[in-house]
Image (cartoon, rainbow, N blue to C red; front, top):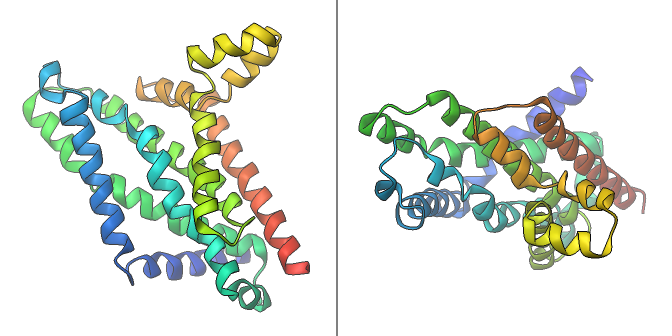
Length: 248
């Protein structure tokens, strides 16, 4: 296990550095920071609320991730398959699991960097008032976990196709279903033609439900287990998909 993690770490460092070899990193980071700020100030009414908190800032993160995270995830494996470098990668003395963990860790760290760059928002709200910094910290953790779940799903879907556009669309669609599964509109429609047990099961898979719980300052074991389990399951499915490609 130690060797697996060591190899994954080496791959992650290489992949993370690769993001900054092209304009992709600058474009993504700029868009993310600008979009989160714009949503908080102009749509969320940050100043109009008259409250020293970042509720309007974190409220839109899952929706921004629907576009931005699949854009990062779509290239993880689809690009490798399209260019044929996946065959070369699979001939190296590394396991599919090591490659998957390395790529995923690099992409998640990259998104984490984007989150870190929004730190001036935290400073600003402390200058303007006396916010609950514990809630802000847990909100950052929740946002990072949501991004990781989106990314794991996108990585798995990326391994299924050579087309990055298809990978992007499918990833965004699946993540959208996870985000909206607990919304009242969806639940009302489900309860109209399915047993309540089924509707409740679908609601329990909602990213928003678990995310909103964390952003209230409550890091419940259930929400942490949900996100970690989903990430692990998606990466396992990713490993199976890549292993089949290796054996093909």
